[in-house]
Amino acid sequence: MLPIYQAQSFVRILKGGSTKPWAVIVKDGKKLIPYAVKLYKTKDIEKSFSVAKDVYCSVLAQEFDLDTPAPALIEFSDDFIDSLSQAQKNELGKADNRIKFGCKLIDGAFQYSETLHRNSLEKYQIEAIYAFDNLIKNGDRRRDGKPNILMKGIKAYLIDHELTLEGLEQAIKDFSDSQWGYWKERHIFYPYLYSSNKSKKIAYFENFKDSLMEIDFNILDSYYYQLIDYKHYTEYDFVILKEYLCLIQKNPDKFVNLLRTQFQ
Image (cartoon, rainbow, N blue to C red; front, top):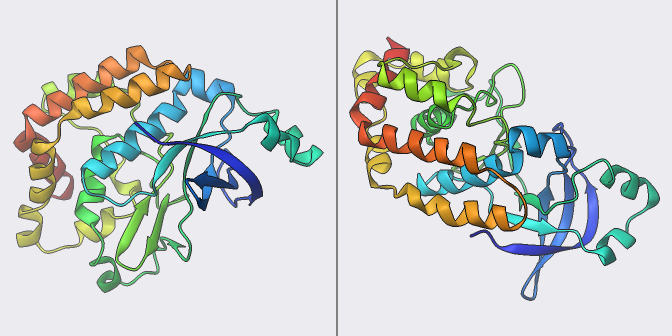
């Protein structure tokens, strides 16, 4: 399950993002740590299960040994709300009042840019990130919008997964019929992977396949029940999610081969 933190103090509104996330300080034992907290509206949670998607994709990224900021669930206590300015209270009043999703702020990171040289990209897990985004049906790590990735040193931190895990029933049907739909040209790393030499493309995604075969997707169950405890109901979509992931896992070679056809 994710840790539960109490917001201690407001820092600032973070740039970018439709959710207008807040930077707040949370307390973990004796440590004060800055977290980014998303202020989803009720309709986003009830129609799109945005909090659940952030939770599940953060957990899955960690299982695939991909970097993502440490996730948590953040509570805004009455004392915290009382400490806010009236303008901040008004903004908070537009958001859903259930427990919120947050992730640790990464200091000193920069957003991906297409100006990065090919040699610079080679230190990141480009193949694995592309395969992961296919798996979670992420259409939002885009070249024509926010890349939703923060880079620091040799780490590429995956963030913002509310626009994922859509159309999984159709994905199950398509995969069973040896079809695969994905917004490949829009993905930030597609040009890099496409322009590699043929001998390299043939071996794409082998390490990702190994990870896929080893993961126990039942690990998501405890997070599902934690969300239910905080009234983030996702039962129907969670059943479909587990069915989808298990189907892919049972056919790893098929999944990898479908990914490779995107670069032929």
